[in-house]
Length: 71
Image 1 (tube, helix red, strand yellow):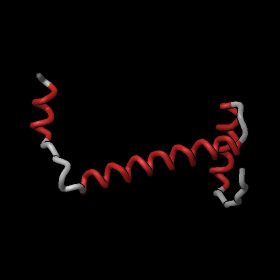
Image 2 (image 1 turned 180 degrees about the vertical axis):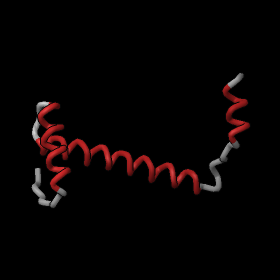
Image 3 (image 1 turned 90 degrees about the horizontal axis):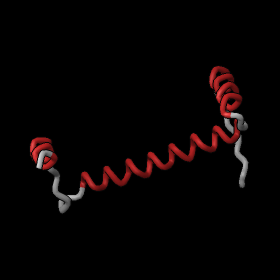
């Protein structure tokens, strides 16, 4: 595992310490989890944006999608 350094506002450091205490883990673990979730969310968003821009992939209107749910 590699190390990196960055700065956070004092209020974030305080909240980080509090969260780590409640979760009974280190501040570093909280940061690793948060970054991991952010990366997963970003990747999911990137896939969704690509699909929305794909002219071959049909886009349903809300009315058509809602009708399909009631079958």
